[in-house]
Image (cartoon, rainbow, N blue to C red; front, side, top):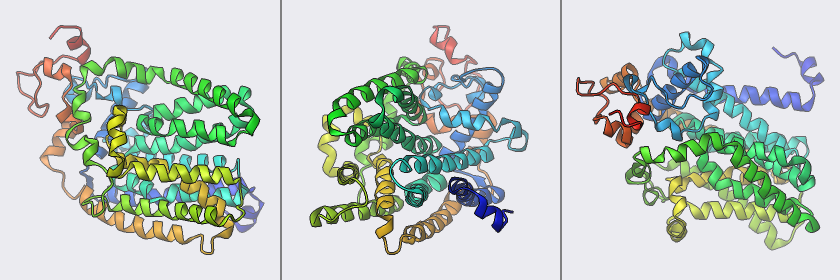
Length: 453
């Protein structure tokens, strides 16, 4: 236990790190409680735990970047990991020594999510510290991790790669601020931050890389904006090159993936706009409402021309990003999605909720001294998190595991992507990996791709 005397002797930053560590533990506690009592029955939880398990085993066996997951699908391998970002799995691989106590990987997945929650708070703090004193930066960092979209990702969708993207965004924004001050000196650091975001979550990188670049230009002094913009573009290009080991192989192997199933049916963007009274989108609307509150306040400040705590132009910038992100989530923006076909790869317009997180954290940190009840946002998060956990506990965990999930565990099936059969599986005569009959050829994917099937 930390004694009061020791607590007072700690620096502000060390106290923040300890509080954020405890806060991430509080966020993870409901998941540990669920896992202690029940089996997870959410397909995303199973597939992420399985990939983590297989990736960790191969990495500790000497495979520097375990792409093929040769033990998946009853030993026939799986290619869908070609499109899975690696950062959260490298973090999870560090917990391989405790695999004997966590044979299915479910506990290690919670540990990864907890590490990402802590890292997201810390990265948000150091980004905001570039602009604000300690108290405001600390408040914004806790807001960043307490937003309902993050809580929903933690308790319901188990989207650890998306959580890794949320962790990487503030790192890129921190480097953007430093690029505005000393562009030549910070090119390599911005490049590494860009590569980190790409290798954490590609959809987030697609949405947010341009925002970080624009942020660097806005923060720069007027006479240096062209230089800063050009150097930031150069640094972003270098970051894309640094991450090529991930995305280039994925692109080259795209022909072997039944990719159309990733952007049609359930994953068709037309099905996933933000809509009022959406059957399963209550927590999306809750996040949106929390995002709109500071946006409305920004409009009020602009209208009344009152002095703000920080650079007015920067406040306008984040209010604009927040408004644009909200716009892209609703059907009214469909003409943009149609005009820019690349956007369909995001699958879900509601993913733009991710892009609302930095604006909300920045704006609330900026207005923290003016807020009469600054902790009301944490009360909202507590109420929302409690109700959402209760729903998730009943819907995503069961006292007995079904035959379906038993087969997934027994045969290490990447079942979430069963409807997305890769071309090598089709070529090898594999139609349903749960039917382990004699007609299924025991060929790894690289042999099928070489024409041996």
